[in-house]
Amino acid sequence: MTKNELGLLLHQYDVYDALQFVLGAQQAILSALFCKDVLQGLHDGVQKSTDKWASELSEKIKENSKKQEWTGVNDWPDNSVNIAGVEISSFFVQNFLIGSFYQNSRNALDILAQAANAGCLASIAKKIESVDFPRMKEVFQQKTYKEAFPAMSQWFEEIAKAPEFKYIDDYCNRTKHTCSLPTKFTIPIFNTENKATVPAFYREKDAEQHKAQNVFEQVPLLYEFLSKAYHDFMIVLKQEITKRTYTENRIYSVKVYQQKYVQSAEKGFSMAFIDATDDFSKMPETIQVLFARRLKYPGEKEEVQATNCFFDTIYVKEKGAIDDYALVGKYVAESPIGEDSLLRFRKYIKAPSNENGVPLIFQAMEDVKQKEKYYRRNHFFDVKTVSDDEELLQLAGLAL
Image 1: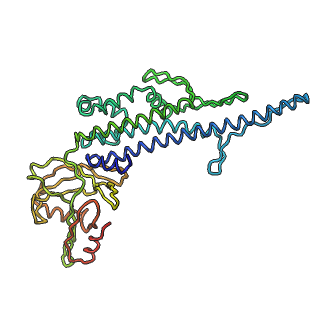
Image 2: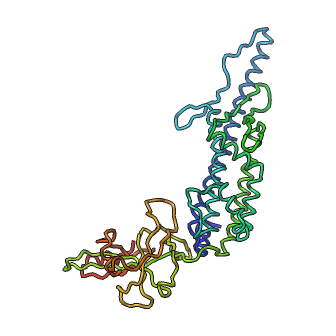
Image 3: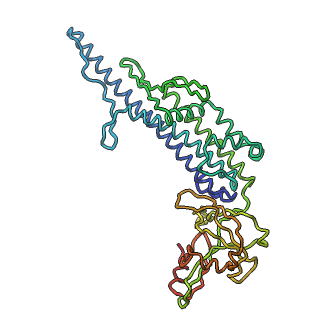
């Protein structure tokens, strides 16, 4: 499934924000693959240079033996690599890549936990900053969520108990919070294979003893585990999102009314609003908004484009009303939103209709954040412009 196809599917089930986490996990896994492949290439390079050196030394010993001369060693294999014009020890680079492989593997699982949080829990998702693999494992073990999402709960349990996960997790905890685990490189001069070994270590928290590991045997196996974990996760995610368990009251678009009169002493304004679906008192206490629209291009190509909702207040227009000023309520953002590459369904809470008896339309007109703030036609929300300013009318009608 392509990125666009997955985006369309997640949009269909109102969990489009989960896409960024799936893509993030993919990137982490690709980074782990890069580390694995470059490690093998560097290892092969060291092996090749060592074999060549040993072969040349052997020939030299044979020649000197015939002459009854001693063969001294005053040079050793050159195991440096050139990176962007800088000569660096191959073993330094390999040690760096080994640590990076484990960290990217661990990151991938944390980011998949974010995807599970956004995709399954949706409108009651845990805060992004508090989510990682152990946290979401605990969440999906709770009775409510285990019953609601049995397949996802099982995925977390199976990954958590896998010896591969335990090793990756413990390695990252040791190297991140305690000290490094320096890889031991050995080069048997007249043997067949160079070796890289991660030393044994013990994690007191779980009384877990990890034995020394041959990097070039272990890393491919761990990558295979990581790839399967991702593959299984995607099957489960696609299955669980179809339930739409916590996706009620999610909105992908609003409308915008903006007004400016050149001859008026009042400054122009704009306001975001939605049409009432019922009497305002019966509408939900909270809504969540993410601007995301499904676009179709010539040739049947489709994709979703999305951005965060930046309006702090969203008004509610009376059901069926023609008058643009017929506002019956409003929703106010729960918290501020800064500039961020992360997409979030922003939460809005139903607010009192009147502030000191001031009609809603006047509240909208006096909103300092929307004073003289105007918008052009775009993918994310419909714009209605009322003005005697021809320049503004032309600009507002131009699509972004």
